Length: 329
Ligand code: GA4
View 1: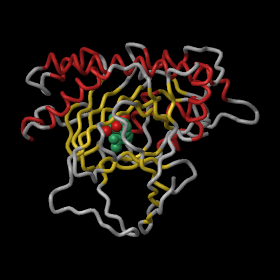
View 2: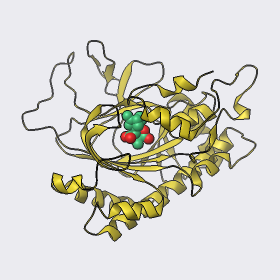
View 3: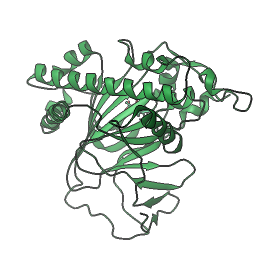
View 4: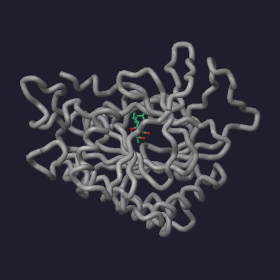
């Protein structure tokens, strides 16, 4: 369903419609892998249901997150600043980006989670157990999804993607985003033509291989589909996960998959909490289009680089920059 859209001068249109495919992981494997490949080509995002991640694991981390963000500012600051891990408030990255949010960034290896939990909770053992259990569950899900991708793309080496994100040396990140409601005097504009927007986390694509996102039941996620000038609302699904293609998967598939541009709005009168897992490769992993994705008709679009090179480019750039441009042939 498409309802009337609004345009900001010089900005993209906003359409209140969502067309993100939902993939039921209890379907037959051959059907799932085909649908995943199609969703990654056409949208760069899909929703998974019947994913096998226990809701208890999800809720335990959500509770820990809400408890942390409810603390007084001075207490939260003890877990910051995020350089790059820890607590952050409004500042995003190192180059002046800002958003209407607070967040926690954690590296996903268990010793690091245990260490950082000490500054995040009065009960660090419960915090780190909730975070580690969540990380284990979504890592398994991410590995299963990339196995399906490898099968769907008929890759020779079926475990090539799984090995990039499933090993102990993978450079994955867990992010808890808390979008507080707007201040009392803030009112969304009722004008269709000049909508007043509160940007929680600005437009960008995720740099890694795959992102696994969930939120509480408050909306805010928007995507911008390839070759389109519209922002599309993605409805919250507290029991499912949204899966997004990252820049590295775009490179590995030689542009066949697209890393989706997205942002999070913070207009709701209720707080939004999202939990986002970014499945990344090891720092020294070489990234280049997989041989099956390259042919005379589809020559390689990117030069080889390491994940560490890409991270350097990422930390030197602004949130909304199109970093893959630096690695194009
Ligand atoms: C976007 C995706 C993840 O949230 C993140 C972000 C990272 C950060 O917050 O430190 C970055 C951003 C993200 C890409 C460009 C740089 C780095 C903020 C920023 C301005 C953790 C990631 O991996 O890249």
